[in-house]
Length: 217
Image (cartoon, rainbow, N blue to C red):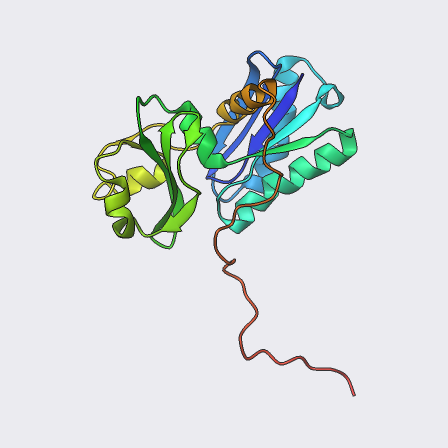
């Protein structure tokens, strides 16, 4: 097994290779405006670090969000393209699950990432591997009761200390954690998610309500 994992659902552009036992190479850069520019060089970098070619990869793992539309689609389209070109399966993993897996927290906790518009993408976890709720997008003040007194990881938690009083690292997801979680689930015979985006809300760019179609006479 050789998994190529990538995620662009947060400001981090992150890539890793996993050989079924451990992560053998990884790269992470934080730049919310350059996902498309940084992703492919990062893939080349981790392959070079591992001394492998792309055609050695036997599976693709991609973070499916939730995340902003523009960044998220860069990773998903790249994963789909690699899968088609190599003829290998593409596995989706919730980005929040990757953050949870990397958390050093005992007992129940929350993962929250920055959804912009003064909102967070979030979910509750029983432990690093077990999500208790579906990913959601809300204003922090609206979920005070649901997250009260729980440790929280992710950039969203760090942004809103009034709601997430016990905010902790990691801030952004790493492909290394994503790959390790996917490898663990695959080894256990679990079926991973399809590589389809979790947007949770409509994109910013929309057709105006009163838009009129003009047809030539």
